[in-house]
Length: 305
Image (cartoon, rainbow, N blue to C red; front, side, top):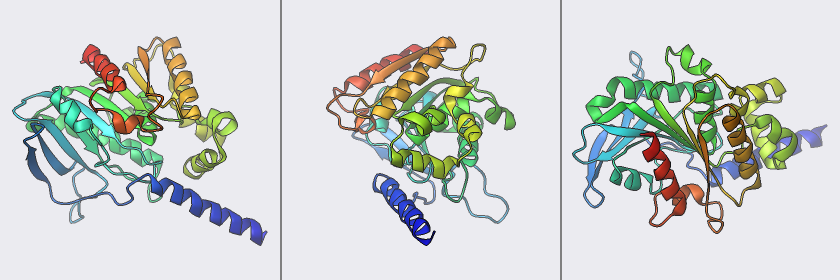
């Protein structure tokens, strides 16, 4: 029994290390500040709280966002970006080339932090996304944002969260909101559209253990936390663009399964594969010159905005 407990602890340490290697562990925070990137002709205002501090409490550094927008633009459509990191790590600054590309094409790009596991739950992360959407609705105009044209974009865990918050309307309804102003969802490299399937069939040992640590061992919870199980005919869901990495089997199979379910429910959906030689860098390369995935994504956005 002692040996088993030791192995469980060792496995957990290895899993945490595995997650950490690809993620930023300490989200950044400082007072809000604006700067201009003259080379790419966009402004960036960093560290804006999207949840007001209560009484004498300090602003939670996990509930702040950065706004990148074209210089001189008065009312830009908005891409709200939810970073990845296994629900437990990551930071709003993990955007790579996206702000440069999307602002050049007339979009404002908003990257948010959100509260992370282990101190918080997945439900708290969903509430933070809703709070950021509410902030854009209420305060966005003063920052040149068009709150009537919002696109959710998420990577990995962020793709799961953005798909779930739209797919299961109960989260938005609990905050007295709907998905009316969300014009589209862009989901990048998630293996968690169907957690039940991942745990039983698709996931590697490490992936299954990671999901068990985040979502527990109850199959009913796995199903409730799976975007695919909330998609059905009659629901008013925005169009989806599902981007997947061809070198990741679980991501590819999950993307195909989720796209099939969306299509069966009459939800507009396109699948955009990453480049075969990108070697798991599909997300990083979005926005780079000549990137075919980016071109297809922009065509999708133009059709929705």
